Length: 589
Image (cartoon, rainbow, N blue to C red; front, side):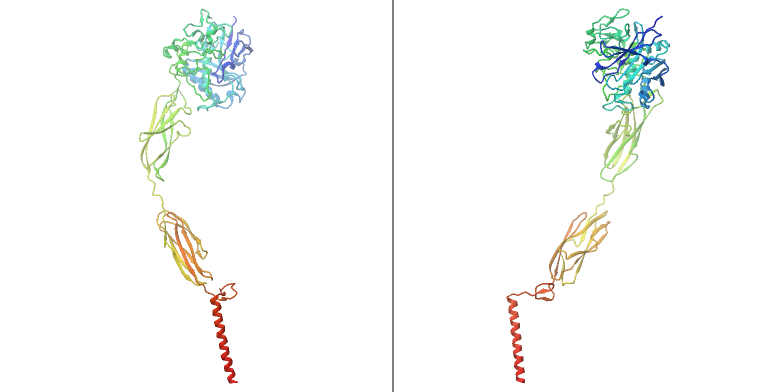
């Protein structure tokens, strides 16, 4: 007996126009021969190559298994250590999570083998590819479905499911949401795994089978917009027109899908230009409610769980135990714990900044998916008034508010965005009033001027004491300064730092010069409540020896009308005295 089998890949949703994306199809071969893998790059272009990606020949590496609801999926890789899903731990963790999720939805006991084909790195074609093997039968879902139904491995040396990823794209392999320019690895993995279960079409642009004969169960439910199936007869044959496959009006005529989709058949992707590997086997873009199996994938988008219509198709394909509610649910929240404020708060001003922080816990005692970043929202209420929300679990769900002194009740409500149910916690606390703000006040005695230092002879000096006092609270910091004539100067330092009620004497000395004269200055004190400015005055007398030359120190004697008269009178007096003296001497002689 001669057996035929085919490995059929379908690409992931597209980032770019779909014409450049690939579909993988091994052609029919004898059971004892090496299968052939055929690459499809649009209508009419075929390239055959060795289909070793599915072969369990001892060159593969066992990476682990995903187990859910009695279904075990063994994962193998063709990559070398450190490559693809063997690089780090995050990539494999996301794949195993996706497999466990799909297995839980399918809800069929058994065992399957998944081969991870040799990784790609060019980042120009398909994001990822996936599909099952096909035997030479008129209608089938592929080898994954067959093994689950019969419990027998269809081809002993081949995995039932094959996935290949292109790591040249910017992938998010973490638990958190992808960045705006990243593709979500787990979302894409769920999409490709679903293709391996039989959510795919073998119809080419001409209507012929892409494996040379036979169609998928999915194909038998593809219909035109008027409800006419595109395949008919037994074995099925394509009876529509090729143009119908490009009509933008194909529908999936599955009974469960119709009920789930509101009583109408959900639309399939059938663009005006046939996209090999994408047309027919995806939902129409923007399908109501969104779905994992849409044809295009946007960066920054998360689709890690099936829409009801996705699960309905699995039931129509024969996975009758598939749970339309998605039994593999996220772990429910068990508690939210308020971390901040931890207690009462002492204000230091009229208001105080209060950081609100919390953490959440999950009920992991049930079969569930652990929480991921941005899947929990915490909302804070102060005295029953909402103060904001946060999804930043790593940051403690931060919300920052400002409060005045008073008594408050804080309530934190946490809810998963992907699961019903809310938990909450409350805490009361008080914002204590701030102590009075220290307010120093500058006081100076005497506080006003002018302050006269009197009239002083040369060589004398006069001190005046000014008392600086802090008439307020806190610390009074300031400095005394002089502006004006240099005959006024400080005796000692002019700066001060005064505690409440403390005082300091600031002494100013006036020292007139030899020439004398009138002098003035302004004394300024700085500090809170200041500045205080006081006018200073002082006079120096004009005393000293004669200096007829009019230069140097002392009092100069300079000619004037009066000075000439005085000098003449003095000389005449001297001459008269000399005349009398001479006369007396003559009489004696």
